[in-house]
Image (cartoon, rainbow, N blue to C red; front, side):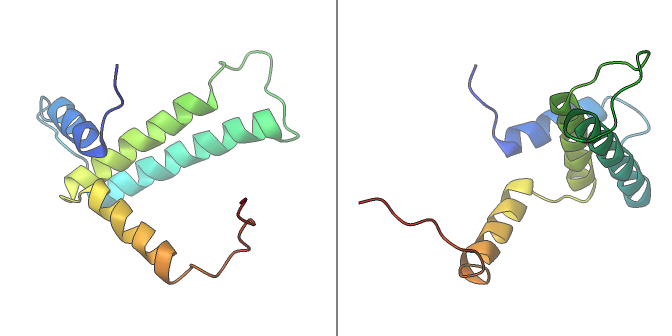
Length: 111
């Protein structure tokens, strides 16, 4: 199965959300959901890489699952505001290629 483009992912999420009368949440509610999902990702990272082990009775979640949850909410947020994440990505990459091009120490090129 070939990977989906961001545009395809946005359309798939929109098709899913469109089947419900409630539709997308408001931008403020969406931001709260994104913050909640980011907290869940942080908790998983802390369990896996940090000093806080999981309790024996805690459900096993994965970083991959939490990243997926965060991506879903991000796509919902973008869709609700009619924002193309592909265009957003191009804008930010252009910023990194220009404004931040000399900000970090580059690896030496191999010949």
